[in-house]
Amino acid sequence: MSKLARKPISIPEGVTLSLGNGFVSVQGKLGTLQVPLLKYVNFHINGNEVKLDSKAEHAQARANWGTMASLVKNAVQGVREGFEKRLEIEGIGFKATMEGKNLVLAVGFTHPVKFSPPETIAIKTEKNVIVISGLDKALVGEIAA
Image 1 (cartoon, one colour):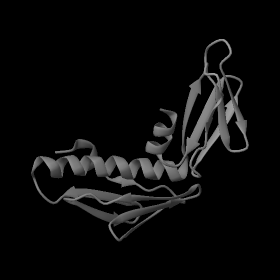
Image 2 (cartoon, rainbow, N blue to C red; image 1 turned 45 degrees about the vertical axis):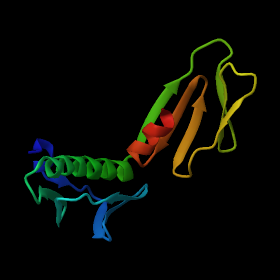
Image 3 (cartoon, helix red, strand yellow; image 1 turned 30 degrees about the vertical axis):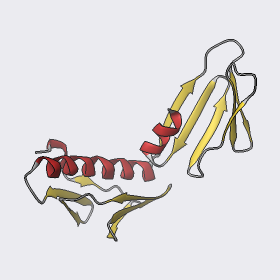
């Protein structure tokens, strides 16, 4: 049984949740995220709280219950505050610059490496630090990796 998923998830002011078509839509001041509903999980919105519970008692149901709770918490935090990763570049001749929306890296190859981020991701460079920010925690982490 998931200990974290048992606790209700509080919805702060300015954030709204709605159910529909197998997704939970989370809207806030920074944008909108859709979290897919997982099997074996009941989803209840009560005012400014969300409660999740499991439909079954087998291992997959318990796993989905905890995963769904984490996904909703991350979505609520993402539309409210956003997520940010900082990457520091170290090395002689290594540098990062921005050309419009594209990140250009000089990291030891004979040519510069150009990276075009998705529309929901913002990238900034400050001296030898690359700052990656966005709404979706998983996507920010994936782009940083």
